[in-house]
Image 1 (spheres, helix red, strand yellow):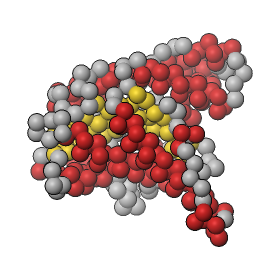
Image 2 (cartoon, helix red, strand yellow; image 1 turned 90 degrees about the vertical axis):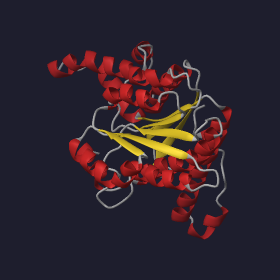
Image 3 (cartoon, helix red, strand yellow; image 1 turned 30 degrees about the vertical axis):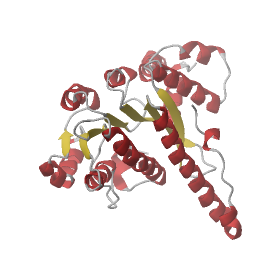
Image 4 (cartoon, rainbow, N blue to C red; image 1 turned 180 degrees about the vertical axis):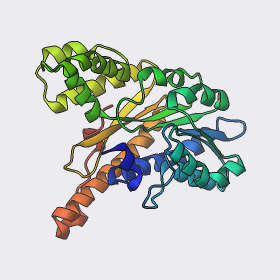
Length: 307
């Protein structure tokens, strides 16, 4: 899908991703607020976009702003502050316009710059407050592992990340790095493709396996994903990867990778991923076996997650 048409309408798989995010942030905010003095928590949307899709669907910045209103009305209110990052000027203008009410309330702050450039400003803004980072780029090359390291190295234990890892896109780049073509343009791009993969997953240990083993597409994708997960774990995080799919029988569009330092977070996120698997099964059953939709069995989400 072209980047220019991405915001035409909200895709079914994006709805799944946003639904998991919205469900998780409520208990996250309630739980983490208990360890703060001012019950203030930050959520950073690293690739915020226009805040609304062309068809009127709610984008993540608007969804999170509405969630912050809900948190402020709880019996024990939580101040959920939002920081949005969006480098595209057109999208940023829309983002500013749509979130203006929350900007005026001091709930939202928007940065018109690239994710990597905004990170120092964000870390200065949130200081040592608990924070949840939603890192949802378009395509595999926008976020290098080194970009995430200042976040991963935060001393605040209540630091969590939810990262869009474009497994399919990255595998295609890795495949291109191993091309045997004699085309001069292809040959010239091989070192760049190789470096891109290493920069994204955080190491070059993938290269030898790619060169020496005849792996299936799925095996290549899982191999790259496993290295990325292991590199995240080196910073003391428990990591779970969940495939975001359009439908039960479809291949993953990408994986959402959840990083936390707390077992409670893993249990909560697993519950919401489990609910999405049930939803996928029910949709599949309704479409293929409408008379028996209500008897669709629930399967353990662990069969699709990578822990």
